[in-house]
Amino acid sequence: MVNLVQMFRMGDHKLNNFMLTDTSIIEDQDNSRAFYPFYVGIDIGSDFHVAACIPFEKFRSEKEWKRSKTMKFNSDSQGITKFIHALEDIQAQFGYKPQDFFILLEPTGGHYSYLVVRVLLDRGYSIYQVENKAVKDFRERQLGLNEKSDEIDARIMAYMGWHKTLHPDMRSVRIVRPASAEQVLYRTLTRDRWLLTTQLTRRKNQVQQLFSVTNPELKRAF
Image 1 (cartoon, helix red, strand yellow):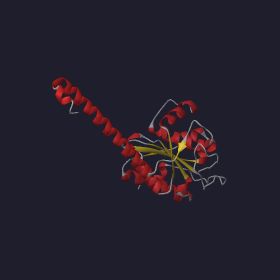
Image 2 (cartoon, one colour; image 1 turned 180 degrees about the horizontal axis):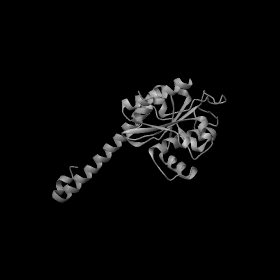
Image 3 (cartoon, one colour; image 1 turned 45 degrees about the vertical axis):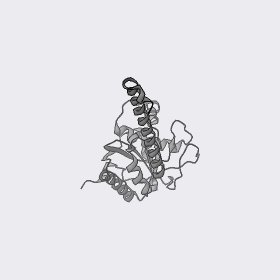
Image 4 (cartoon, helix red, strand yellow; image 1 turned 120 degrees about the vertical axis):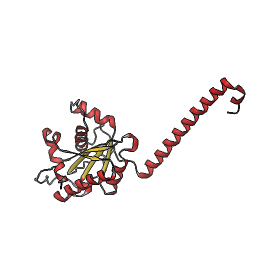
């Protein structure tokens, strides 16, 4: 049996005692400083996701956090369950709770992140989102990295979460809570209505143009 903790190897050492486990919501208007024992970055894809789970103290060494292992898992229920079990194994190993994980991901289009976000929220994990462009800008401008891969972006998002907790006033990275299930449903319905209205208007204009050429009298009916 594969040891899922091995994919997110944390090491056998204990984390520093000064790290707080009772965290607060981190937003641009919140000036409080909250530290998490673990920072998780998830690069979202349509078929699979890539996650990096990095302990607080590893960020003190640039080489360590950049070499942290990542985990690739399918975006379906089976893959997400595998990812949840890996997180639970880490919790059991170090004696932490879901609230001790700061999880950061991008709000990608196509609702690719919807299922994993809902599952993590239902289990009490602290989920935050960052703009897609912010990851690219942070990678290139702050870290000087032009290379891009799913694994690199997952590690960088974990680093961005850690960096934001140290510098909550940093405006270049805006971290927000993901939308609730009701908000997602409302936005989806609103978007679909807009798409249908746009398509209907386009088709109506096409019919009018056709009738104006073939039968001008019928154009008045539309």
